Length: 254
Image (tube, rainbow, N blue to C red; front, side, top):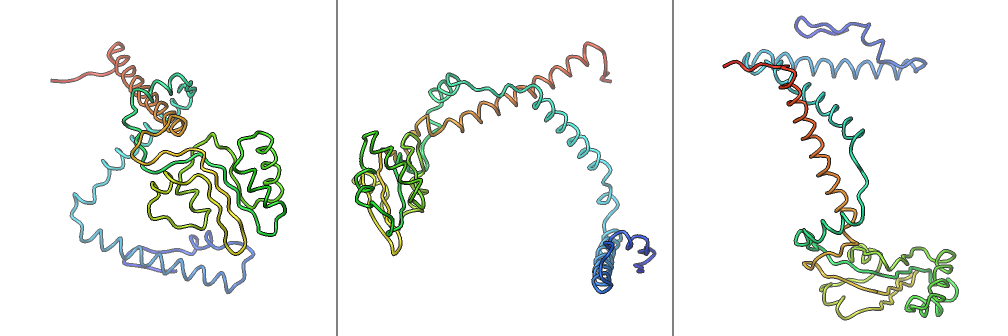
């Protein structure tokens, strides 16, 4: 079907790339595209072969090194999967946080918040204005029930920290000094052409302060697990070496 120099493309190869039960026109397009690509790639390869110095074309060592790396990686991954203790208790997280507080400086502002987005046509808007400000459990329950029925978006878990920038993406306001805004605002009520927005800022921490533990728990857990993984692999490598010494599995010639 094609030739570049002394390299040939045979019809037997093309038969494998054309799906069965395909229209003749489509089949011809697939074949032609494959042939064009084959010619281009083969010409490029032949040019590289011709012009590269012999030492540049010796890939055996690189291929073998790459194979060793892949095999080792797969073995270590399987070992980690089987033997890594993935349970990280609260005491470990607390201890790591206390010992490394300086590493948890906030890069962004975070807030605890009650947030409700509701259509202007929704019922009981006056009630929503009362409920979202209230700390009374009965009012909280009423707001929760209301949101599940009528709100287009909401967040009612004021025990968890959120990035202030993420909340701002949901509210049609522009701020030029976010830290100053947080210092002087607790309740935000705004609107656009279709919705009302209600925001109760229950707590905040500004960037460059120390991030609270509750905001860093998952991050700390990942750090602890990664340290365990590194230590497990290090121990495994050391054990293999020590076994080799014990069993005289290798010799070093001077």
